[in-house]
Length: 368
Image 1 (cartoon, rainbow, N blue to C red):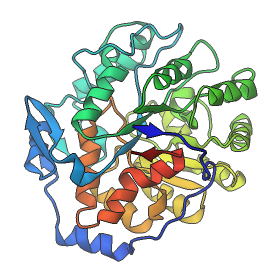
Image 2 (cartoon, rainbow, N blue to C red; image 1 turned 120 degrees about the horizontal axis):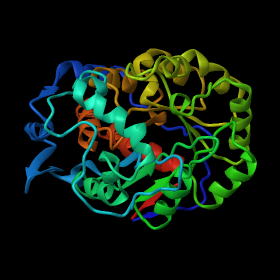
Image 3 (cartoon, helix red, strand yellow; image 1 turned 30 degrees about the horizontal axis):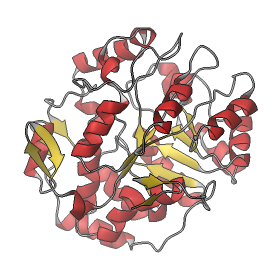
């Protein structure tokens, strides 16, 4: 069970003793692991997982310790309030099916087939106006079920709202208020009306930060209204979690808006605000890594990065500012967890920081 005491580190970077970078690289180079698998279930070939009653589960959760997933979503809805029962337990359709071949050493979306991408894009566009499709199974009940199978103690929900006609933050915060294992960020579009009032309302309802998605929200990270939003977040001790970097499957405008060149000014000009770079810059990881090394108000979140890139991030980034995330329901949480477990093999203190200590300090959480 998670508790929420006053958070002394909201809006600031958390400092800790770091594991020497050369130790991480040496361990990874000495024990180069298998990273290609016939499907997700074949992750049971690794010592961390097993297939039990037809489900992929963490074999020994106690040996891993608590896990916090900083990057998850439920169904998103636009045009009307959430039409999906987010507490419905049903067969879950992830955007990357568990039966797909799995390569842990590429950016995660390269595991999709063309048919998977077509289904994903249809589900997230026209489907977001309906109560059907794969997204109808992207519920809190299904997420919690997967969390239990993989020993994940807490997950952070990331809503995405437009300037009008979307109430995803309201829906997600409502879900989190009924759960002792789910927390939620808020979402306020920079061009929405009454931005300050919305931030105050969402924080009052328990928002742990604000999700900002340049591609989906069609807004520049370094635009004037965006810069105003960051300052307002800083004043309220609300970290900003960016979708950060191009991923290669978005429309051209979205690809332009998510270029890392647009993130430098917000971070440099708003040092009192904590920024989390979701996906660690995606296909521009090196630029995100440089930001984290340069500015103490920057965290890197690992969702979708390749095993090799995660090894490099662990070796070069400040290790007290690296966060585990999976981007469920785009991917099963086992994919991201397998990469971090492999990359931290033989480094128990580093594993503990990445899987829960850093996130726990940032969120102000304690575990029984």
